[in-house]
Image 1 (cartoon, rainbow, N blue to C red):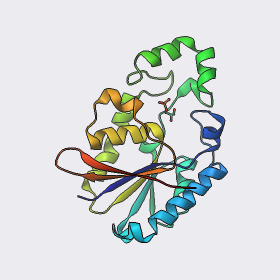
Image 2 (cartoon, helix red, strand yellow):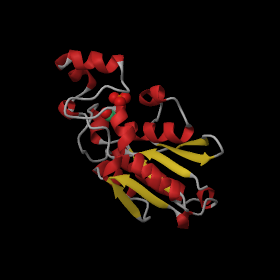
Image 3 (cartoon, protein in one colour):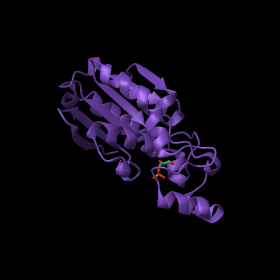
Amino acid sequence: KCPIYITRHGESMHNLRGLIGGDSDLSPNGRAYGQALADFIHSEQFHEDDVDELTVWTSTLRRTIETASYLNIPTVQWRALIEIQVGICEDMTYADIEERYPAEWAARKRDKLRYRYPQGESYMDVVQRVEPVIFELERMQAPVLLIVHRAVARCLLSYFADYDQHDIPHLEVPLHTLLKLEPKAYGCDIKTHKLDI
Ligand code: G3H
């Protein structure tokens, strides 16, 4: 079984401004992460895993494609890997949502796993949406690096590490960190590389 690498895209302009949703570009820090990730992946340390075999999967959103662009490795874009769709809360801060849609805010707090944004998705929706990608990943004979989004990374991680579904929306997946998942009989070993930028 091949290792699977998961990272979030580099910091985006929306991350910098505290906004959710949208399709923003990377911030200067985010671009530095793209470069740091490329340096790491092309380093001696990584060569042990045979970088020549690696393929990169992104979503169809700019921040993941831009992060991948530093790598010079063949890339596949999956619409099924886009970030959780936040519907009417697109391009808002969490404080905006709390103020403008207090009932939605409270409902999400009560059940973050099942809460579905009006005109958007829930974590359970995302779990279902990424299923075809997981099937494909499980058939792969070569390592894959997924450059994705926080909610999607949480869903993938919980699947491979066999975490309880209720923990999915609360898993810590920091920016600018590469996770290496090595499958074992049950679940997987996870190594974390925080990359300096
Ligand atoms: O909405 C986009 C976020 O990256 C997901 O975070 O589910 O903790 O709000 P959240």
